Length: 613
Image (cartoon, rainbow, N blue to C red; front, side, top):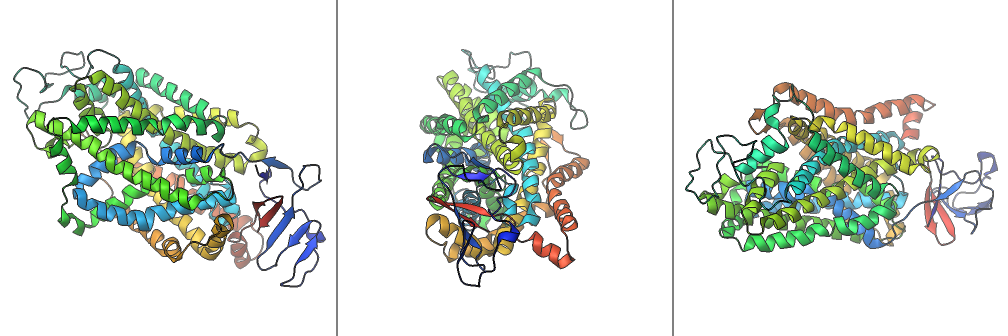
């Protein structure tokens, strides 16, 4: 296990007055430092087998993954989340079915995967979290790290509430008859229509399924809220569910990757077992072929529409998940010579295949429901987002044989999918803060994680109100989307244009033994930034018109949404201004100092350590 300096910077072992004048191009040795060439500024630092040698900085060990598979499962668990189950199938059939796979694959090859690989390589080489890593790349962009932490906190404030809904469904599933199968409950209205009943029932324009009323009137209780301007009270049932979820999260990540790396053996593999069971079950249902045909039947005309390519770019980006600090954090605990190139290809491929297969799991059931309702699949597939899972799919499960069993495993699957992503998002913040302030928090990780989970829980209270679903929708659309796109765009520009694509490729060669080819270089320098700029501009030029159930979001909520999104990325220009103000010298000198790496990167090399400055 490698050592790293516990101070904010890794300083050479000599002070300025100890450094002698060496001729350019020659090697010289000073106080245990072998300075290889002043131009490359690559130093070999003698690393004694014991820590008895007196140095100017104290050293500590950096935790690493117990096994390579722990890292892979953690990254897969992070990338494969709830969005793979509900977002991809909906976007796929909405944008041309099988034809959508063409722009999706192109955007993955030239945008998503290169960015995914870049973050893994950065984290593994520099071995730092999302804040302190910028000292070693381009200090003026350090505000990106603070922006990432704020975005992760926003995500934690609403994403875990969706898991609380799933947990409530899970608890409610432990009954002989699932509570969303009948219209005789206290929360049902006169419009409740159970078309699965044995009686002759006609489905009218005003009909509401028992599953929809269970979700909206019993779990969310949105009828007790007038919208975002009157959220109503807090649901104590959902509050208890969320409290239990954060308790599980805390005890899974409080000790670091040593513990979370073991938990993901269950949370990352269990969803695949359940997906396979549900796929087999769905394929045997009457009418399943109708759903599959609707899902994959290509509509080639859709490829001419710009919004299809925008949706493809957005889907692959948010599915792989660069920009949240997670890949940097997870990769920083790898061994230095780990093949992160292979990891990037494997995990991104698994993620994309999972999304596609999840579509079959969902649409076989939608075809079954269309058969039962005697309607077209397009009428049944109107629900989007969480409603697709908590209304449409839950209703289909309730009317299958052995419904209780399938309901339990389905909502357990949703919980495990969500837990992986929560572990990852919070680890991005934890690693970032602990690496930035090691003297304060390095030996108090458990206390910091406890404080962080409490903050996230308190920040989620607005989403636990009767109108909490409206808050979740607002945060999902505005708090993360444009902010993360902006963050990753600036990150790609900082690495490729300021740190330098040549230097970055040399770093990769130092780790892996080979230099990235021209394809990767072109993607990092031009294609990926253009890809991000394209998606960001498309979003900003055509902001989504939000609607949830029967509630149309008023215009002022759009302004609030943009303010929430801006509150994170505003850290970037603020830090840039701060950096230029506190740096001494003329304006030109300040700019040059601010874009020049200020901290050495320790490169483990047997019994010696190379400091690449």
